[in-house]
Length: 358
Ligand SMILES: [Zn+2]
Ligand SMILES: [Zn+2]
Image 1 (cartoon, rainbow, N blue to C red):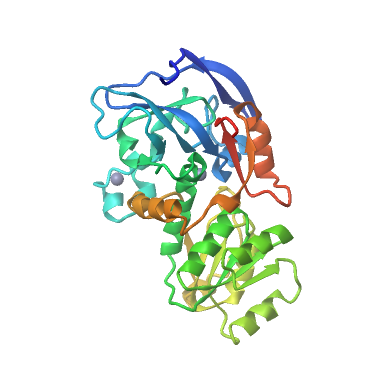
Image 2 (cartoon, rainbow, N blue to C red):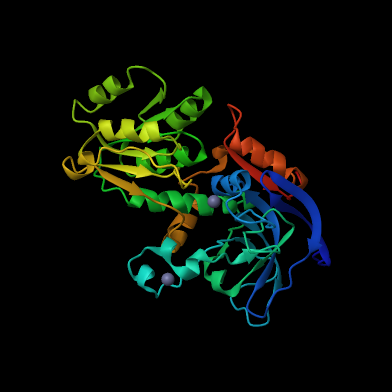
């Protein structure tokens, strides 16, 4: 017998800049087209960290959107799910009909911009709480977790999706040389997916444990980002031609400028970590116009990739387990966010977990 659902629950509420508090809030009620999910695991995502540290959205909110858990209540009109299903959630789902969706610009779809999962207050994901309400319009994004896979693997589907979407923006041919700047959890996933696509990946980071893992994840070369002969090394590795593409998984403008110098003509530079608005930077636009070096961005997930992402992660062709280094109980969510914002040398993906150990 599943445990009865209580009236109230514990939740970590964002009350202002760097102010996360463990509070008791009502368990969300669900409508006839909705699910109630008991949260097992929620990943700490850089975009939430930014909202918490810079106060870019008004409080109160309950963050956390890389969520996996168990279906514990079904609205009367919900079909295709059963109580007890172990599921991974997607808090944004596009309408697939609007002008933006017809252009596959799903992240710009008005429905997509709405957050469809909440633990209370203005919907913000809700994964840092015991239960979340999953609204009808995001049900198409709910993925069942196979019996042989963990909630933790389920919680990684959303970040993996955002990275596969970004990789798909690159016009690569087998054997191309791609620099991935930054080998945190995001950069490492880029390294893996690019290597699986046949690219020769040059990975850089400042932390030796990350460089070791980058090699395990398929990087052909893994180098200290500060080494003084980095540009020479790129020239050598590409026999003077330059990089075919560079993925910037660190929020550094200097690294973008470096990449602009190091990619070949008609190469591509993909920004993945520049999520903070209001910090203009100098760019030599002739590099874009004359040298045809594309400056691209990618943000958020592509709903149409969800099944492919689930297959890769759950088959462990893309094994995400080595990325998960730190686990915190719900009440220590502020410490989890702090660690993810200022990672220790050995730490990569940080999770808040409510799964009993063992
Ligand atoms: Zn995320
Ligand atoms: Zn749309």
